[in-house]
Length: 103
Image (cartoon, rainbow, N blue to C red; front, side):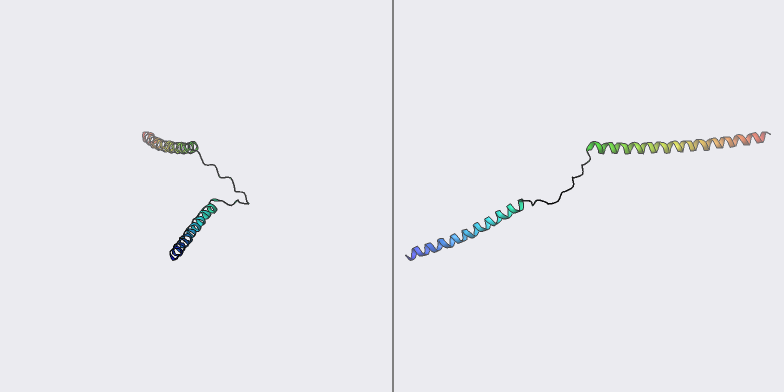
């Protein structure tokens, strides 16, 4: 009988340990399920802004490059015109001096 009592006592202790383990497992499962459930918002969220497509980005980049190339062309045209005006002014000055010397 003492042997049966000891065996029953050991089984009771083991069952209590398993009960604690099952309680821990159930608590973890309940926490995971609670984390997975998202609460419903009572307000409305604004619609997300649409992202720019690759084609739009390439088009803007090409337009920027074209604008820069046009600006460089204009600056070069202005510089060439300035050099031409300066050269013409020098030639005109030398011609005027020659005409005055001849008189």
